[in-house]
Image 1 (spheres, helix red, strand yellow):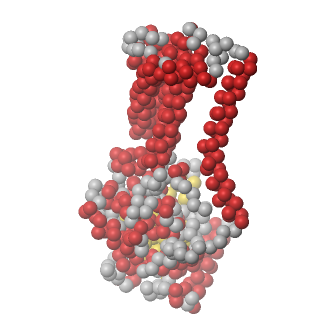
Image 2: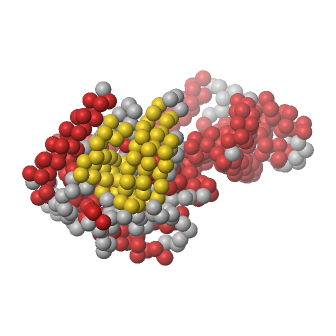
Length: 260
Length: 289
């Protein structure tokens, strides 16, 4: 099990400095965004649609380049240092569950046999070891999302980016996956940046919430949740949780007003 | 960690089904039988009416032969017709093979190089929209070998559906999967082989089904234009020849074989498509109620 340092003495993983992103047609998707991500952090980007949270994620993933500003990793980024989970499970329908989880290794040119143990471990982590040979269409929405998470975690990445991964799931499945996600993060010790528009989800999961506003997309406020992990169903009903939710809701409301 | 949303095994006790569901099940069962029985009934009925029209109106066989006479020609001339069918079938299958290789190959080339696509695609469309009957006589002026000429005609009609549907398929990759491949540093060939080709497969197979029928049409048209000479005689030539001799029964018999070949090609390609897609593609998956 990986060790996650207490909040105070974590080392930097990557730094986003004064990043602007302008799309053709003079659309400013992101203005002056700065964010320091430290190893072991669980950061949520919270905001209304159009606030640039997905754009920020794509920039961090290296899928698009900042118009102004820099995104720097503390150490050279290697293959497999980054895992991504999208809003849809984004599985290859023609491949079985284990072949889907094998994908990051396959693209590195490794054989299935050489990483069989890693694949099995990732599937165990998400509780799907019995479904190795199933095809995605045979699985429920929540199970597909678990496969997607297993694929993102199988390379033991330093950073996992999640773009509203549970938005399309029903609430019961979503709660369950929120609980499990924290457990998985603790187990492999990775850093997570999590895009969401749910106040409750962001409070439950994160130690830092970056609240963003739209038109142009920008950071309004950074909230520190700071409650200790592991968090469980008890935390969900606690007074602290409610207080953080109130604060986050207020910040979100300010963000909406700032945009209006 | 436990997973709650996994399916529980079904309980062994059986439950009574309500009347509506029972009706639905019964209707499905009837439809399954009717799918086969009704077309056969229609065929029998049509043949019977045909026969009655010939008998009641005393129509001479060189104008409209009775079904029995067509059957007689089919069995009596079987050796001639079968040889011709083999020839037409060979041209059709060879043309289909070239159409698949050429169509899919061009699609991949277009997909890999935008400039090549922009240069050549308009001409692919022009080749497709010009009727093959109009091009065929020219082809046989410049191409010495009848076989090559016939293949060229059949290929001209058949390659376009493969090209256009495969192109569509190669471009229909889920954009998130495309991003994922980029994040993991996939090479262009890895992307083509592991992502674009599997995504394009259902589209390609749809194009293939159309191309199968078209290559038969192309082969028949080419034969009609080429006439005989050197390569033996295919079914289309048999139809023409029987027409000149007022052997209408043999025309019908040859026509029936052409139709049967078309059906066979379609059925074979549908089966192939089902085999390749049944495990994962929505089109091949039986829906559970």
